[in-house]
Amino acid sequence: MQGIKYTRVEYSKTYNLGNYENERIGLTAEVPEGTDMLAAYNQIRNDVEAAHDYRKDLKNFERAKEIVSDSQNHYGREVIRAEEVINKFYDKYPFHRPNDVEAALQLDEAPLIEHKDAKETWEERY
Image (cartoon, rainbow, N blue to C red):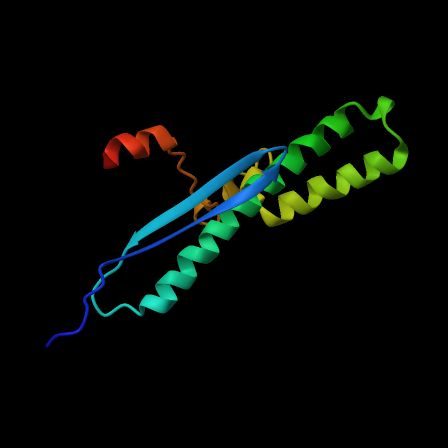
């Protein structure tokens, strides 16, 4: 009797965003024969977490940019904190840095996010 042959690894997770909103992020990976399936599973799980962190960081970054651009209507410590958030974001995601062509070309650091509507998934399955 032969062992089980795995060809694909899938991982998805639903995140509570608050305010009665959820976000489901999932990845499916085709894996070549002989691949360590636990390592592949851990990799796509880490990629899902990275995609969620990226979206969360991007939201905070956008809010920080709003504060800095409207600094007259915010306390000095809010502006300083917003500038720190922006700098940390650029350090973590250098491809977002404006006019930085070198960093923009290193897109392998950016998580690839593909949005798929639940309705589309339902129609594909049934």
